[in-house]
Image (tube, rainbow, N blue to C red):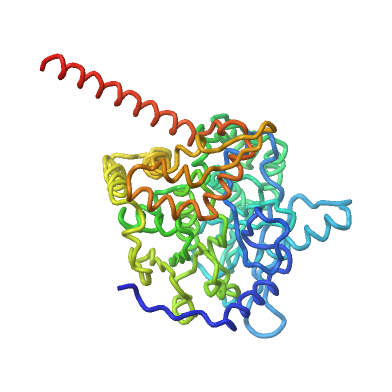
Length: 485
Protein backbone atom coordinates (compact mmCIF):
# COMPACT_ATOMS: atom_id res chain seq x y z
CA UNK A 1 0.00 0.00 0.00
CA UNK A 2 1.25 3.48 -0.75
CA UNK A 3 2.23 5.49 2.31
CA UNK A 4 -0.41 7.86 3.59
CA UNK A 5 0.69 11.40 2.74
CA UNK A 6 -1.04 14.50 3.98
CA UNK A 7 -3.04 16.34 1.36
CA UNK A 8 -1.91 19.85 0.61
CA UNK A 9 -4.02 22.62 2.04
CA UNK A 10 -4.87 25.56 -0.17
CA UNK A 11 -3.22 27.95 2.27
CA UNK A 12 0.01 25.94 2.01
CA UNK A 13 0.14 26.40 -1.75
CA UNK A 14 -0.46 30.13 -1.51
CA UNK A 15 2.19 30.45 1.16
CA UNK A 16 4.69 28.58 -1.02
CA UNK A 17 4.07 30.77 -4.04
CA UNK A 18 4.27 33.95 -1.97
CA UNK A 19 7.59 32.82 -0.48
CA UNK A 20 9.04 32.09 -3.91
CA UNK A 21 7.79 35.38 -5.26
CA UNK A 22 9.27 37.36 -2.38
CA UNK A 23 12.63 35.61 -2.41
CA UNK A 24 13.28 35.71 -6.15
CA UNK A 25 11.05 38.47 -7.50
CA UNK A 26 12.00 38.16 -11.15
CA UNK A 27 15.10 36.00 -11.44
CA UNK A 28 13.99 32.45 -10.91
CA UNK A 29 15.94 29.32 -10.06
CA UNK A 30 15.42 26.83 -12.82
CA UNK A 31 12.28 28.24 -14.46
CA UNK A 32 11.16 26.68 -17.71
CA UNK A 33 11.78 28.55 -20.94
CA UNK A 34 8.82 26.96 -22.62
CA UNK A 35 6.22 29.58 -21.81
CA UNK A 36 7.87 32.96 -21.64
CA UNK A 37 4.54 34.64 -21.07
CA UNK A 38 3.69 32.75 -17.89
CA UNK A 39 3.20 34.64 -14.63
CA UNK A 40 6.43 35.32 -12.80
CA UNK A 41 4.84 34.07 -9.58
CA UNK A 42 5.06 30.46 -10.82
CA UNK A 43 7.48 28.20 -8.94
CA UNK A 44 10.96 27.83 -10.36
CA UNK A 45 11.29 25.47 -13.28
CA UNK A 46 14.00 24.45 -15.68
CA UNK A 47 14.22 22.80 -19.04
CA UNK A 48 17.48 20.85 -19.05
CA UNK A 49 18.62 21.45 -22.60
CA UNK A 50 21.16 19.07 -24.01
CA UNK A 51 24.65 20.56 -23.84
CA UNK A 52 25.03 19.57 -27.50
CA UNK A 53 23.25 22.86 -28.21
CA UNK A 54 26.61 24.49 -27.48
CA UNK A 55 28.51 23.90 -30.71
CA UNK A 56 31.59 25.77 -29.51
CA UNK A 57 33.08 29.18 -30.12
CA UNK A 58 31.33 31.16 -27.38
CA UNK A 59 32.88 32.40 -24.14
CA UNK A 60 33.53 29.93 -21.33
CA UNK A 61 31.91 32.06 -18.66
CA UNK A 62 30.31 35.38 -17.79
CA UNK A 63 31.54 35.91 -14.22
CA UNK A 64 33.84 34.55 -11.59
CA UNK A 65 32.45 35.47 -8.18
CA UNK A 66 33.71 34.97 -4.65
CA UNK A 67 30.88 34.69 -2.12
CA UNK A 68 31.91 35.11 1.52
CA UNK A 69 30.03 35.04 4.82
CA UNK A 70 29.68 38.43 6.48
CA UNK A 71 28.27 38.91 9.97
CA UNK A 72 24.91 40.65 10.14
CA UNK A 73 24.61 43.88 12.07
CA UNK A 74 22.27 42.24 14.58
CA UNK A 75 22.67 38.77 16.09
CA UNK A 76 25.21 36.04 15.44
CA UNK A 77 24.02 35.02 11.97
CA UNK A 78 26.05 35.45 8.81
CA UNK A 79 24.91 36.62 5.41
CA UNK A 80 26.46 35.40 2.12
CA UNK A 81 27.81 38.36 0.18
CA UNK A 82 29.68 38.77 -3.10
CA UNK A 83 33.16 40.01 -2.20
CA UNK A 84 34.85 39.66 -5.60
CA UNK A 85 33.57 39.88 -9.15
CA UNK A 86 35.41 39.37 -12.43
CA UNK A 87 34.86 40.97 -14.83
CA UNK A 88 33.17 44.15 -13.67
CA UNK A 89 30.72 45.12 -16.39
CA UNK A 90 30.44 48.80 -17.15
CA UNK A 91 28.37 51.02 -19.43
CA UNK A 92 25.35 48.72 -19.27
CA UNK A 93 21.95 49.97 -20.38
CA UNK A 94 19.46 50.52 -17.59
CA UNK A 95 17.55 47.31 -18.30
CA UNK A 96 20.77 45.28 -18.50
CA UNK A 97 21.99 46.76 -15.22
CA UNK A 98 18.72 45.86 -13.49
CA UNK A 99 18.91 42.27 -14.75
CA UNK A 100 22.55 41.99 -13.63
CA UNK A 101 21.68 43.33 -10.18
CA UNK A 102 18.89 40.76 -9.83
CA UNK A 103 21.27 37.98 -10.88
CA UNK A 104 23.96 39.06 -8.43
CA UNK A 105 21.42 39.32 -5.58
CA UNK A 106 20.16 35.77 -6.15
CA UNK A 107 23.52 33.98 -6.48
CA UNK A 108 24.70 34.16 -2.80
CA UNK A 109 21.51 32.39 -1.69
CA UNK A 110 22.42 29.35 -3.80
CA UNK A 111 26.11 29.40 -2.86
CA UNK A 112 25.15 29.01 0.82
CA UNK A 113 21.83 27.16 0.66
CA UNK A 114 22.31 25.67 4.13
CA UNK A 115 21.32 28.75 6.12
CA UNK A 116 23.08 31.53 8.00
CA UNK A 117 24.24 29.79 11.20
CA UNK A 118 28.00 29.39 10.84
CA UNK A 119 31.11 29.47 13.03
CA UNK A 120 34.79 29.75 12.04
CA UNK A 121 36.30 26.33 11.23
CA UNK A 122 39.79 24.84 11.12
CA UNK A 123 38.78 21.97 8.80
CA UNK A 124 36.17 21.81 6.08
CA UNK A 125 35.95 19.30 3.21
CA UNK A 126 35.73 21.09 -0.12
CA UNK A 127 32.44 20.74 -1.98
CA UNK A 128 31.70 21.09 -5.69
CA UNK A 129 28.10 21.68 -6.75
CA UNK A 130 26.01 23.65 -9.22
CA UNK A 131 22.71 25.47 -9.59
CA UNK A 132 20.66 26.86 -12.48
CA UNK A 133 18.99 30.25 -12.78
CA UNK A 134 16.68 31.28 -15.61
CA UNK A 135 16.10 34.97 -16.28
CA UNK A 136 12.78 36.53 -17.27
CA UNK A 137 13.86 36.56 -20.93
CA UNK A 138 14.39 32.77 -20.85
CA UNK A 139 18.20 32.86 -20.85
CA UNK A 140 19.82 30.24 -18.62
CA UNK A 141 22.82 30.70 -16.37
CA UNK A 142 24.54 27.87 -14.53
CA UNK A 143 26.52 28.44 -11.36
CA UNK A 144 29.48 26.08 -10.88
CA UNK A 145 30.60 26.29 -7.25
CA UNK A 146 33.60 25.22 -5.17
CA UNK A 147 33.19 25.79 -1.43
CA UNK A 148 36.32 25.66 0.73
CA UNK A 149 38.23 27.31 3.56
CA UNK A 150 40.42 30.29 2.62
CA UNK A 151 44.18 29.90 2.91
CA UNK A 152 45.71 31.15 6.15
CA UNK A 153 46.22 30.25 9.82
CA UNK A 154 43.49 29.85 12.45
CA UNK A 155 39.74 29.15 12.24
CA UNK A 156 38.00 30.69 9.25
CA UNK A 157 34.64 30.78 7.51
CA UNK A 158 34.26 28.95 4.19
CA UNK A 159 33.93 30.89 0.96
CA UNK A 160 32.59 29.93 -2.45
CA UNK A 161 34.21 30.39 -5.85
CA UNK A 162 31.32 30.53 -8.29
CA UNK A 163 31.68 30.56 -12.08
CA UNK A 164 28.55 31.76 -13.91
CA UNK A 165 28.19 30.41 -17.43
CA UNK A 166 25.44 29.68 -19.94
CA UNK A 167 27.22 26.43 -20.90
CA UNK A 168 26.34 23.05 -19.40
CA UNK A 169 29.54 21.04 -18.95
CA UNK A 170 29.99 20.03 -15.30
CA UNK A 171 33.16 17.95 -15.72
CA UNK A 172 35.02 20.65 -17.61
CA UNK A 173 34.09 23.38 -15.13
CA UNK A 174 35.11 21.13 -12.23
CA UNK A 175 38.59 21.05 -13.75
CA UNK A 176 38.55 24.85 -14.06
CA UNK A 177 37.57 25.10 -10.39
CA UNK A 178 40.52 22.82 -9.55
CA UNK A 179 42.80 25.38 -11.18
CA UNK A 180 41.08 28.24 -9.33
CA UNK A 181 41.48 26.39 -6.03
CA UNK A 182 45.18 25.75 -6.70
CA UNK A 183 45.72 29.48 -7.24
CA UNK A 184 43.57 30.61 -4.33
CA UNK A 185 46.09 28.95 -1.98
CA UNK A 186 48.65 31.48 -3.27
CA UNK A 187 46.76 34.71 -3.89
CA UNK A 188 43.66 36.14 -5.56
CA UNK A 189 46.06 38.03 -7.81
CA UNK A 190 47.16 34.72 -9.36
CA UNK A 191 43.57 33.75 -10.19
CA UNK A 192 42.94 36.87 -12.27
CA UNK A 193 45.34 36.18 -15.20
CA UNK A 194 44.15 32.56 -15.42
CA UNK A 195 40.49 33.58 -15.64
CA UNK A 196 41.34 36.40 -18.05
CA UNK A 197 43.01 33.87 -20.35
CA UNK A 198 40.01 31.56 -20.03
CA UNK A 199 37.61 34.38 -20.83
CA UNK A 200 39.54 35.21 -24.00
CA UNK A 201 39.54 31.56 -25.15
CA UNK A 202 36.67 30.16 -27.20
CA UNK A 203 34.67 27.25 -25.80
CA UNK A 204 35.76 24.13 -27.75
CA UNK A 205 33.49 22.10 -30.00
CA UNK A 206 32.72 18.49 -28.93
CA UNK A 207 35.90 16.41 -28.92
CA UNK A 208 38.17 19.43 -29.22
CA UNK A 209 40.73 20.85 -26.76
CA UNK A 210 41.68 24.37 -25.78
CA UNK A 211 45.09 24.93 -24.17
CA UNK A 212 45.76 27.83 -21.82
CA UNK A 213 49.15 29.19 -20.78
CA UNK A 214 49.30 30.29 -17.15
CA UNK A 215 52.10 31.51 -14.91
CA UNK A 216 52.24 30.48 -11.23
CA UNK A 217 54.85 31.98 -8.88
CA UNK A 218 57.53 29.44 -7.82
CA UNK A 219 56.16 26.94 -10.37
CA UNK A 220 56.71 28.77 -13.62
CA UNK A 221 54.57 28.62 -16.75
CA UNK A 222 51.94 25.87 -16.96
CA UNK A 223 49.95 24.66 -19.95
CA UNK A 224 46.41 23.64 -19.04
CA UNK A 225 44.43 21.54 -21.51
CA UNK A 226 40.63 21.56 -21.33
CA UNK A 227 39.01 18.89 -23.50
CA UNK A 228 35.31 18.71 -24.23
CA UNK A 229 33.87 15.16 -24.48
CA UNK A 230 33.11 13.98 -28.01
CA UNK A 231 29.67 12.71 -26.98
CA UNK A 232 28.34 16.01 -25.71
CA UNK A 233 24.90 14.83 -24.54
CA UNK A 234 26.52 13.45 -21.36
CA UNK A 235 29.13 16.11 -20.66
CA UNK A 236 27.09 17.81 -17.93
CA UNK A 237 26.68 14.71 -15.75
CA UNK A 238 28.51 12.04 -13.74
CA UNK A 239 26.48 8.94 -12.89
CA UNK A 240 29.07 7.40 -10.54
CA UNK A 241 27.72 9.15 -7.40
CA UNK A 242 24.15 8.03 -8.14
CA UNK A 243 25.38 4.45 -8.61
CA UNK A 244 27.26 4.65 -5.32
CA UNK A 245 24.20 5.87 -3.39
CA UNK A 246 21.44 3.69 -4.83
CA UNK A 247 20.72 0.20 -6.14
CA UNK A 248 19.99 -0.22 -9.86
CA UNK A 249 16.34 -1.09 -9.13
CA UNK A 250 15.93 2.16 -7.21
CA UNK A 251 17.45 4.20 -10.05
CA UNK A 252 14.94 2.63 -12.43
CA UNK A 253 12.07 3.54 -10.09
CA UNK A 254 13.30 7.15 -9.91
CA UNK A 255 13.45 7.19 -13.70
CA UNK A 256 9.91 5.83 -13.89
CA UNK A 257 8.64 8.53 -11.52
CA UNK A 258 10.41 11.25 -13.50
CA UNK A 259 8.99 9.94 -16.79
CA UNK A 260 5.47 10.48 -15.42
CA UNK A 261 6.53 13.90 -14.09
CA UNK A 262 6.00 13.26 -10.41
CA UNK A 263 7.42 15.03 -7.37
CA UNK A 264 10.89 13.78 -6.39
CA UNK A 265 12.98 14.94 -3.42
CA UNK A 266 16.58 13.83 -2.90
CA UNK A 267 18.09 14.02 0.59
CA UNK A 268 21.84 14.00 1.34
CA UNK A 269 24.36 15.55 3.71
CA UNK A 270 26.69 17.05 1.12
CA UNK A 271 26.01 19.64 -1.57
CA UNK A 272 28.18 17.73 -4.06
CA UNK A 273 26.17 14.52 -3.64
CA UNK A 274 22.85 16.32 -4.05
CA UNK A 275 23.99 18.30 -7.06
CA UNK A 276 25.49 15.35 -8.93
CA UNK A 277 22.64 12.93 -8.19
CA UNK A 278 19.88 15.29 -9.27
CA UNK A 279 21.73 16.16 -12.48
CA UNK A 280 22.17 12.44 -13.12
CA UNK A 281 18.46 11.73 -12.53
CA UNK A 282 17.45 14.47 -14.98
CA UNK A 283 19.99 13.21 -17.54
CA UNK A 284 18.35 9.76 -17.57
CA UNK A 285 15.43 11.40 -19.40
CA UNK A 286 17.49 12.18 -22.52
CA UNK A 287 16.38 13.01 -25.24
CA UNK A 288 13.52 14.54 -23.25
CA UNK A 289 13.89 17.53 -20.96
CA UNK A 290 12.57 17.99 -17.43
CA UNK A 291 10.40 21.11 -17.73
CA UNK A 292 9.24 21.64 -14.17
CA UNK A 293 10.67 22.85 -10.86
CA UNK A 294 14.33 21.79 -10.72
CA UNK A 295 16.59 22.91 -7.86
CA UNK A 296 19.69 20.74 -7.21
CA UNK A 297 20.13 22.20 -3.71
CA UNK A 298 17.16 24.01 -2.21
CA UNK A 299 18.18 26.96 -0.01
CA UNK A 300 16.78 26.84 3.52
CA UNK A 301 14.63 29.88 2.81
CA UNK A 302 12.93 28.09 -0.10
CA UNK A 303 12.11 24.78 1.63
CA UNK A 304 8.40 25.48 1.11
CA UNK A 305 9.03 24.47 -2.52
CA UNK A 306 8.29 20.88 -1.44
CA UNK A 307 4.66 21.95 -0.87
CA UNK A 308 4.15 22.91 -4.52
CA UNK A 309 1.26 21.08 -6.22
CA UNK A 310 3.15 20.90 -9.52
CA UNK A 311 5.89 18.36 -10.44
CA UNK A 312 9.38 19.04 -9.10
CA UNK A 313 12.82 17.48 -8.79
CA UNK A 314 14.74 19.01 -5.90
CA UNK A 315 17.63 18.29 -3.56
CA UNK A 316 17.43 19.02 0.18
CA UNK A 317 20.19 18.70 2.74
CA UNK A 318 19.62 16.00 5.37
CA UNK A 319 19.66 18.56 8.20
CA UNK A 320 16.26 19.77 6.95
CA UNK A 321 14.68 16.30 6.94
CA UNK A 322 12.26 17.09 9.76
CA UNK A 323 11.09 20.29 8.06
CA UNK A 324 10.45 18.31 4.89
CA UNK A 325 8.58 15.53 6.70
CA UNK A 326 6.44 18.12 8.51
CA UNK A 327 5.49 19.82 5.22
CA UNK A 328 2.12 19.10 3.59
CA UNK A 329 3.00 16.95 0.55
CA UNK A 330 1.10 14.60 -1.70
CA UNK A 331 2.35 11.73 -3.89
CA UNK A 332 6.07 12.35 -3.53
CA UNK A 333 9.09 10.09 -3.90
CA UNK A 334 11.49 10.97 -1.06
CA UNK A 335 14.95 9.51 -1.69
CA UNK A 336 17.48 9.19 1.14
CA UNK A 337 20.85 9.14 -0.64
CA UNK A 338 22.74 8.64 2.63
CA UNK A 339 21.00 5.35 3.45
CA UNK A 340 20.00 4.31 -0.08
CA UNK A 341 16.31 4.11 0.83
CA UNK A 342 12.94 5.59 -0.12
CA UNK A 343 11.41 7.34 2.90
CA UNK A 344 8.15 8.03 1.05
CA UNK A 345 6.79 6.73 -2.22
CA UNK A 346 3.53 6.55 -4.13
CA UNK A 347 3.77 2.74 -4.14
CA UNK A 348 3.43 1.93 -7.83
CA UNK A 349 6.95 2.89 -8.97
CA UNK A 350 7.79 -0.73 -9.89
CA UNK A 351 4.73 -0.97 -12.15
CA UNK A 352 5.08 2.21 -14.25
CA UNK A 353 7.36 0.85 -16.98
CA UNK A 354 6.49 -2.15 -19.21
CA UNK A 355 7.87 -5.23 -17.34
CA UNK A 356 9.89 -6.61 -20.27
CA UNK A 357 11.58 -3.27 -20.99
CA UNK A 358 12.19 -2.70 -17.28
CA UNK A 359 13.99 -6.06 -17.13
CA UNK A 360 15.99 -5.10 -20.23
CA UNK A 361 17.22 -1.91 -18.53
CA UNK A 362 18.18 -3.80 -15.37
CA UNK A 363 20.03 -6.53 -17.30
CA UNK A 364 21.93 -4.01 -19.43
CA UNK A 365 22.92 -1.92 -16.41
CA UNK A 366 24.16 -4.96 -14.49
CA UNK A 367 26.34 -6.39 -17.25
CA UNK A 368 30.02 -5.53 -16.71
CA UNK A 369 29.29 -2.53 -14.51
CA UNK A 370 32.14 -3.42 -12.10
CA UNK A 371 34.68 -3.40 -14.93
CA UNK A 372 34.10 0.26 -15.87
CA UNK A 373 36.96 2.58 -14.99
CA UNK A 374 36.50 6.08 -16.45
CA UNK A 375 33.58 8.45 -15.91
CA UNK A 376 32.98 8.45 -19.68
CA UNK A 377 32.59 4.65 -19.67
CA UNK A 378 30.24 4.80 -16.68
CA UNK A 379 28.14 7.56 -18.24
CA UNK A 380 27.73 5.70 -21.54
CA UNK A 381 26.97 2.43 -19.76
CA UNK A 382 24.27 3.96 -17.54
CA UNK A 383 22.68 6.24 -20.11
CA UNK A 384 22.55 3.67 -22.93
CA UNK A 385 19.76 1.40 -21.60
CA UNK A 386 17.48 4.36 -20.83
CA UNK A 387 18.01 5.83 -24.30
CA UNK A 388 17.23 2.38 -25.72
CA UNK A 389 14.02 2.32 -23.67
CA UNK A 390 12.82 5.48 -25.41
CA UNK A 391 13.95 4.15 -28.79
CA UNK A 392 11.77 1.05 -28.30
CA UNK A 393 8.72 2.90 -26.96
CA UNK A 394 8.56 6.17 -28.91
CA UNK A 395 11.37 5.95 -31.49
CA UNK A 396 8.80 5.72 -34.32
CA UNK A 397 7.51 9.26 -33.63
CA UNK A 398 8.86 10.81 -36.87
CA UNK A 399 6.71 8.52 -39.02
CA UNK A 400 3.58 9.98 -37.41
CA UNK A 401 4.21 13.65 -38.04
CA UNK A 402 2.09 14.74 -41.01
CA UNK A 403 3.46 17.77 -42.81
CA UNK A 404 1.77 20.60 -44.68
CA UNK A 405 3.24 22.11 -47.82
CA UNK A 406 4.76 24.83 -45.64
CA UNK A 407 6.69 22.19 -43.73
CA UNK A 408 4.75 22.59 -40.47
CA UNK A 409 4.12 19.19 -38.94
CA UNK A 410 1.14 17.78 -37.05
CA UNK A 411 1.64 14.82 -34.76
CA UNK A 412 -0.89 11.99 -35.21
CA UNK A 413 -1.11 10.88 -31.58
CA UNK A 414 -3.82 8.25 -31.99
CA UNK A 415 -2.13 6.48 -34.90
CA UNK A 416 1.22 6.72 -33.12
CA UNK A 417 -0.14 4.91 -30.04
CA UNK A 418 -1.97 2.31 -32.15
CA UNK A 419 1.29 1.46 -33.90
CA UNK A 420 2.66 0.05 -30.63
CA UNK A 421 1.75 -3.65 -30.81
CA UNK A 422 2.56 -4.70 -27.23
CA UNK A 423 -0.31 -4.00 -24.83
CA UNK A 424 1.94 -3.15 -21.88
CA UNK A 425 4.05 -0.84 -24.06
CA UNK A 426 0.95 0.84 -25.48
CA UNK A 427 -0.46 1.39 -21.99
CA UNK A 428 2.75 3.18 -21.00
CA UNK A 429 2.97 5.19 -24.24
CA UNK A 430 -0.60 6.45 -23.85
CA UNK A 431 0.37 7.94 -20.48
CA UNK A 432 3.73 9.25 -21.64
CA UNK A 433 2.34 11.18 -24.64
CA UNK A 434 0.28 13.28 -22.19
CA UNK A 435 3.36 14.52 -20.32
CA UNK A 436 5.07 17.84 -20.89
CA UNK A 437 8.29 15.90 -21.49
CA UNK A 438 6.86 14.38 -24.64
CA UNK A 439 4.76 17.39 -25.68
CA UNK A 440 7.79 19.72 -25.76
CA UNK A 441 9.83 17.16 -27.68
CA UNK A 442 7.08 16.71 -30.29
CA UNK A 443 6.54 20.46 -30.63
CA UNK A 444 10.18 20.83 -31.64
CA UNK A 445 9.91 17.86 -34.01
CA UNK A 446 6.82 19.36 -35.66
CA UNK A 447 8.77 22.53 -36.47
CA UNK A 448 11.66 20.66 -38.09
CA UNK A 449 11.33 19.12 -41.56
CA UNK A 450 13.83 16.38 -40.68
CA UNK A 451 14.54 14.55 -37.40
CA UNK A 452 17.49 16.16 -35.58
CA UNK A 453 20.78 14.45 -36.44
CA UNK A 454 21.72 13.73 -32.83
CA UNK A 455 22.58 10.78 -30.62
CA UNK A 456 18.93 9.73 -30.18
CA UNK A 457 18.28 9.69 -33.93
CA UNK A 458 21.46 7.66 -34.43
CA UNK A 459 20.20 5.04 -31.95
CA UNK A 460 16.77 4.97 -33.66
CA UNK A 461 18.39 4.26 -37.04
CA UNK A 462 20.59 1.54 -35.50
CA UNK A 463 17.53 -0.10 -33.91
CA UNK A 464 15.56 0.00 -37.17
CA UNK A 465 18.49 -1.55 -39.02
CA UNK A 466 18.73 -4.32 -36.41
CA UNK A 467 15.01 -5.05 -36.85
CA UNK A 468 15.43 -5.23 -40.64
CA UNK A 469 18.34 -7.62 -40.33
CA UNK A 470 16.41 -9.81 -37.86
CA UNK A 471 13.41 -9.87 -40.19
CA UNK A 472 15.67 -10.83 -43.09
CA UNK A 473 17.27 -13.63 -41.06
CA UNK A 474 13.86 -14.92 -39.97
CA UNK A 475 12.70 -15.00 -43.60
CA UNK A 476 15.82 -16.94 -44.61
CA UNK A 477 15.23 -19.46 -41.81
CA UNK A 478 11.61 -19.92 -42.89
CA UNK A 479 12.67 -20.40 -46.50
CA UNK A 480 15.21 -23.08 -45.51
CA UNK A 481 12.63 -24.84 -43.33
CA UNK A 482 9.99 -24.81 -46.09
CA UNK A 483 12.49 -26.18 -48.68
CA UNK A 484 13.55 -28.95 -46.34
CA UNK A 485 9.90 -29.91 -45.84
